[in-house]
Image (cartoon, rainbow over all chains, first blue to last red; front, top):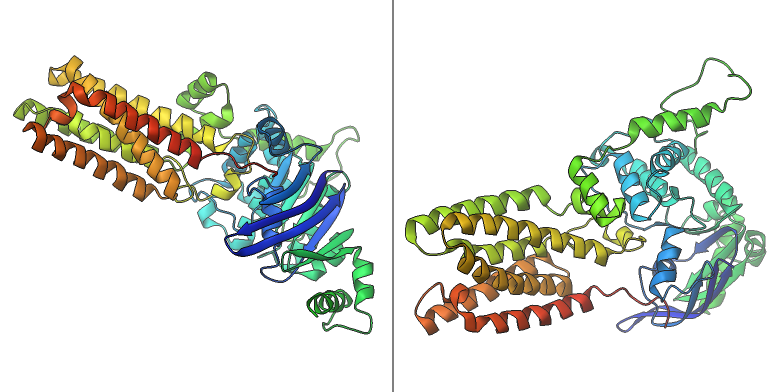
Length: 247
Length: 244
């Protein structure tokens, strides 16, 4: 298992962002769904070793991120796209991706080719030498994804990756997710249920810091049969599960 | 994503199929890697060798640590300090160098400075190591420039020792305040305010403006403040434990 989480909690002052979450994930694409404030980003940040849990246990890639050596090893094998990708406006696309490839401790000889490959995978070849400050929001999102995959991560964590992408780019991105999911654990936090339906093998629905559903997209759809509101079957399942959790 | 209609490769379509044993995508990736790679300059290559880490060297030299502005400000302030010292006889270099170095340190690290802070925190090369290297660079360069300036001002030994120890204390104070509050501006203010209090306090107590950098009785207190502030900075930048 690449991700093993048990009774994981995170509190910010009086706010319980994540409340006793249990999760196990091997290779595949996992969708993390939920309304705003459900705790998705906090959970993802803990898995990215950016945010320490308040309690519970977390094992990533069969290692304990609480210790320096294993944490460093996890980070070498991790790809992370934060919800708000900060960037250096004066860097070019290639420089930005190369910089984070080096900070991921990739062997420097492998870096140029890995950077070129990730730029090509995201279709950014025409913009490789463009300054980041000249790029649109969708382009910057793709740059963020490119830096996340540059080290061919075994654990890929993406927070709202399709925000700003147009429909054609989203379709291409889902194909990329499925390709990565064949060999790595990909966890995608998103508001867009159609991304989950198209790309994810499993889906986890969070509300108020807790997991209220975990199963396949088909199982979530089944939850909405005859209940729920929404235009698509998965949306009806989503709203039915949320309604049941809150009642 | 290479197959998406809006994501065409920059090299475009090739006119026809190549020989069966040539992977054109692989060839193109190799070409692109050479074209797009950033060739490190001599300073970065030297830093990479010294630090034994290309990532640390890149973090030191290319991220927004206000490198150029800091170097220019340091040179300007110390040149002005030498000029004033020579014309007035007061060791202005020693008086001005500590807050300049403190400002450099305060602006070397933190979420208020690094736009990609969140991302940086998930990297194998830790942000604390980056901080350490940047602090050493700020301190090392300022110490070097200060030595040159002090030598030029004619009182190298006494002045150098006079500013080196207080500079350590002010830098540590600025760093502790900046990391604890996550604000470089607060760090600069703390360093500046601390230094002003010491200089003015010693001016009142000893009757001379330069007592803060000439009094040997202050060396131990300076070192104690520096040690305490370093402990605070280490605490403020501690790597969070991943599990309870």
